[in-house]
Amino acid sequence: AWRPDGDDDRTRRTGSAVKVRVPAKINLHLGVGPLRPDGYHELNTVYHAISIYDELTARRGDTLTLTMEGEGAGELALDETNLVIRAARALAAHARVPAHARLHLRKQIPLAGGLAGGSADAAAALVACDALWGTGLSRDELAEIAAGLGSDVPFLLHGGTALGTGHGESVSPVLARPTTWHWVVAVAERGLSTPAVYHELDRLRAESAAPAPLGPADDLLAALRQRDPAVLGAALGNDLQAAALALRPALADVLKVAQAAGALAGIVSGSGPTCVFLAADAAHGGRIAAELAAAGVCREARTAHGPVPGARVI
Ligand code: C5P
Image (cartoon, rainbow, N blue to C red; front, side):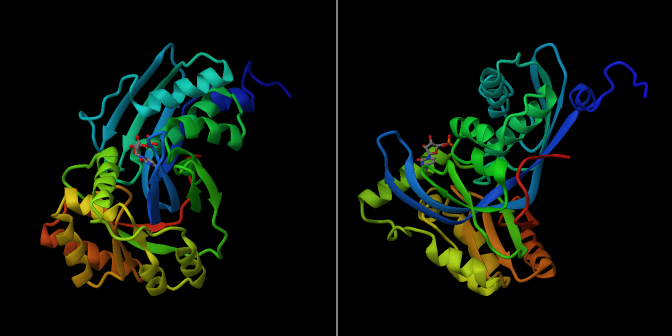
């Protein structure tokens, strides 16, 4: 059969826009071990991808450019320091192709929120450029490049619920019967610096002013298997929470309001300042979000569910 020049699957895929959707993450368990000589902390974490998404569109171009809209537009640098640009360049170098693309980011994940928004965008850039350029890297190769970009980037390629070790970059899936968990996500007015929160934890620990380290995630993994939100709620834990609360004492009010509103449990997400609350179902989540919004203790309260897949072409 006759086909117009170049109109095969490959050029159709590489010739037009590629759109990738990537989720935010929370940590159901974040056990922070000692500070390593390389400046990272040893982690035992359980990552969980939730339904708050960024979208990255990649088109052909003569150079590498990035534009954006949504959360953080006007604040986030779009130059060579941006994780999207760094990810595209890292992939191009690995695959020995020119780093030529026009990238556009639609952001819904707040900046510096403890939801790994920057890492999510890096993961999205790897998947989008791999498709645009037809470089066809394996998931393992992408994960290796991802690990060089940030601790959470490999997980955001992966998605779902997964165990993270090393400094977070080493990811293995948690096998569990599919269960959907319902979350309320309280977004703060201003972000927190991740290194500052880790540093504050080191300081608190040096003064013996931090709670005992959580250690491995065994209890959380057992709770996940029970598929009961009350059981999961009791097992949530985050070693960075004390540090985030020390740097942002007002977060205690967010936790208190949600508890009074009937949340099954609440924790600071990652390094914060976003707080996440477990709800019994979607309607329960909606009521908690409404009470948080009414109390005026956060910029925005959103509902979400998880687990959801990682960075994917849509
Ligand atoms: O890996 P990523 O660039 O996202 O990490 C940002 C910062 O968070 C690191 O520079 C480090 O200060 C801190 N961090 C840490 N231990 C980890 C992960 C991150 O101390 N396991």
